[in-house]
Image 1 (cartoon, rainbow, N blue to C red):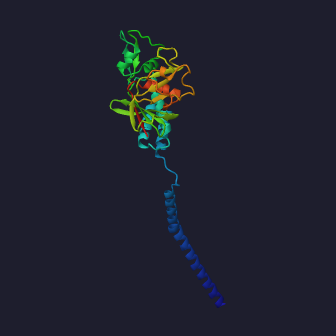
Image 2 (cartoon, rainbow, N blue to C red):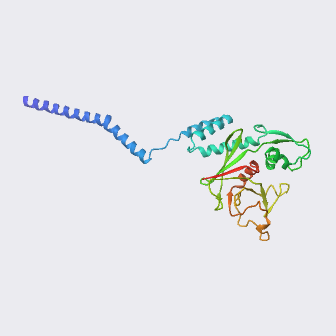
Image 3 (cartoon, rainbow, N blue to C red):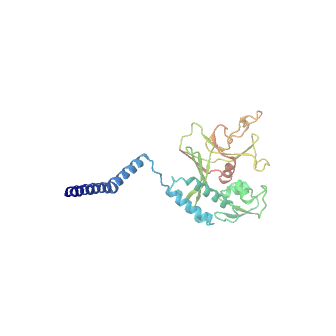
Length: 300
């Protein structure tokens, strides 16, 4: 009987020691080894780039969007501008640029907005071309801004004028055109456009700087003036100070009629083989917003 009790006691002692060792081992694994292993795994994943990337700009974008949805357009737009500056690599930047561009364009042509606009009274001898030149604007902008149906003006007429202090940065890698506006000493993002294709002559070295030189409206292979009824529907071209570099819509399979040789076009109309090709609606916007002498920068 005593031996049986002794054996039972020894068994319980061994069992207790075994359970104690197992508990200690589990404690060491759970509190020390397991966390360390998790840390090592996370470090390996970080090196492999497998962890999800945090986009700090996304939260800022959502805050700005909430302001805009609430009707606080100015505050929302300012938040989007700050987000672009602070988090230029955020996945929300393209959408932020689109929203800012639409808001800027709507504000520019809104009759209620008086920002950077002034009233001009037509003087005897004035013409749209003369007013545009004197006021640093363009005929197309004056016509569009004032809803004019023609080019005839009368002395005493009131016109709303916007000086056009815009420049364009063309990024060849992204095939994007960034329209920038200068106000005072500051220049800021205004709107972004995307080119379907960019073909530059081989002699253009990037980075390059040039200017818009005149405007061309082409209809049936001929240049038409702004007074021509075909002008509104005509294909718009923005030639530059460098031969072969023009902002225009993609060339058609047949740009000129067989009976109309290329030499019949004025020298301001460049070859159809090269240029920065844009959607017609985007080009119409740029046609109104830039003027003769507007800066154009090409980067990669």
